Image 1 (cartoon, rainbow, N blue to C red):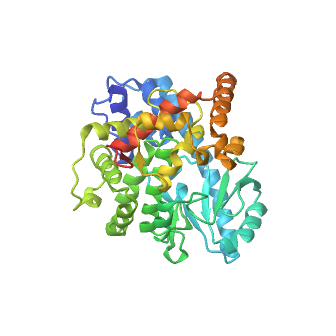
Image 2: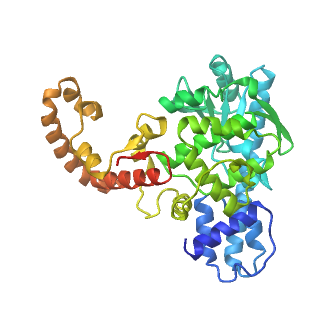
Image 3: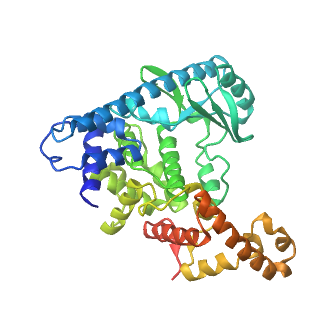
Length: 414
C-alpha cells in the first residue's frame, strides 16, 4: 500500500473505534485523496469525526467533508424513519419480517446515521409477499421492478428511499453453494430477533444467521462487482458488538461446507490486524496467511475491484463470475484454456443470439465466425457507449479469476 492508502485504512480504524486524538500520525497526509477514498468506500461520514480532530486537515476539505457528513445524516435519518413506518405497518398486519444488512448493521456503528445505505432490505415469507407489497405501496412507495417471485423493488419519490422486498436472502441465484447455504435456514422466521436501532425496535435476523448471510453477501460483491472497505468495518463492528451472542462454530460449519474458509481466514486476519476486530473468531483455525495475499485483498477492497481504474460498468462481467459464486464452477482452468473457450465456446456457452447453433451443434463453426464478425462491429459501437471490448472483458476476467484463486475462493488447474 502507498502512503495515502495506509492513511485511509488507519483513519478508518481510528474512526470506528472512536480514537479521535491528534497524535501527529496524519501530519503529512494527502487529505484530498484520503477524502476521495472515503467517499469511494461510502465511509466519509463515518470518518469525519476522526479526521476533523487532525490539525493538518485543510479548512476547505474540512468544510466539504462536514457538508457530506451532514447530508448523509439527514438522508439516512429520513430513510430510517420511512423504514420504521413501513415495518410498523407490517407488524400491525401480523406479518413477520426481518430487516437485514443496512440498518440492522448500522446500530453497531458509533453513530448509526453516519453509515450510508442506498436502500433497505426486508425479508418476508412468500405467502406474505402480496400483503407486504400493498403495505409498502400504502406508505408512498411505487413498484419499480425486480423478480416477481423473489425480489421486488420500491421507490419513495418523495425522499428517494428504496425498499427491496425479498422472499429469500439469495435473490435469484441458484447453484450448489446456494443449496448448501439454504440448509442453514437463514430465511427461517424462528431465528429472528428484535433489536433497537436509533431508539426504534425493528425485527432482524438472528446474529448467527446474519453473520453467515453477511459473508455470502460480501462474497457476492467481491466476486461479481467488487467490494469496498466498508465490509471490513461492518464485520469488525458486528462481531465486536455481538461477541456474547455469536456461536462461531455455526459460522465455520457453513463456510467449510461451501469452501469459503480460506478466504474468511484471510479476511478476518485483515479485520484483526488493521481494524481492531476481536480475534476470537479465528481461535482454533490452523491457517498461515501470506502477506502478499492480504495486501492484494485490501487493495482490491480500497478500489472496489478496480485497482487499475479501468472499470466502466461492473455489471458487464457478472455473467463470467456468477458460476464460481454459486458453485457451478470451482476451478480456474488457466488463461490459455479460458481464452480458447472464450473464442470457441461450446453450444451451451453461447447466448441466445446464436440459438441456431445451440439447437444444431453442427452449425457451431458458422456461429463462431458470426460471433467474431458481430463482436468486431460491437467493439466499435461499445467503445462509443463506454462498454468493454471483448479483449478487455477477457483480460479483466482472467485477472479477477487469478485473484479469486490466490485468496482461496477457487482452485487453479495445475
